[in-house]
Length: 217
Image: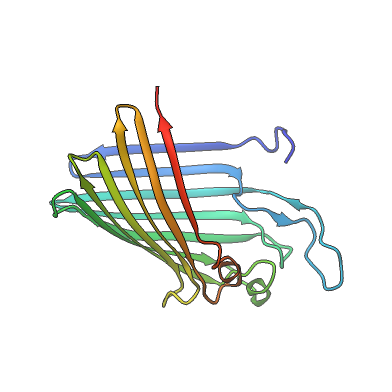
């Protein structure tokens, strides 16, 4: 959207670091990460222009370290979230729990479970052009292993949607290589996994290979 005082974005964070744990609080009045149609889509009617609206957010995050384990939890309450198939704003609660295990030499394993709950969800929001459920579960599994005195990091990540992973997701494998001081190489691939979620199903054949070289100075 156009630059204006109404579109100015604000964010606040308060972080506390203590022995073995940390706690953070967040507040924000920012533009949403996704767009929506200005007018609710109707059959046999051209789609209207797209726009991005402001949302308000309150949240917190906590991390607790215990031996080789890192336990974490996050939650965020969002107000003013707009969708395409309903004219009124919605409120959403995003929550996450997870852990990391670092008890294996040069290895980090992690599991994260997240849920996004939409308050006052309407059945028509499950169809085009929103495709959102009242509750959207997401599971992320990640493993990272370092080699050659941490000059190479190999990471595998699987991120799936749905309680039984029925909505699809993606798998990504990549390695980062410190070729020399200030020069890093990344190389990997992404496999999109189809499912019941139409948007993800539509991109399941768009697997890709990526590579980049980064020079820091």
